[in-house]
Image (cartoon, rainbow, N blue to C red; front, top):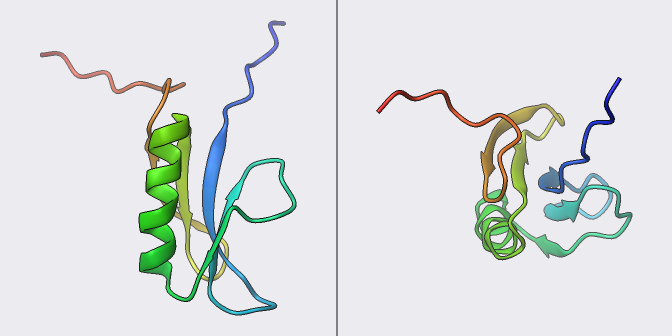
Length: 82
């Protein structure tokens, strides 16, 4: 069985302790950015994700994934036939 390559990701998650929203890279304990609103965190996180070519994952307040975007090597590219 082949080893799967770990995908680098940045997540926008709600900060239950301090309020507001954090941008965190997978595998890191500390957040890269903390913002008061989800919109501000998404904007900052998207910029970081584009610069570092990572997957960008936005979570709802309850922790479930709301949406994601690929800004790097997409592990599951779309199968568009153009």
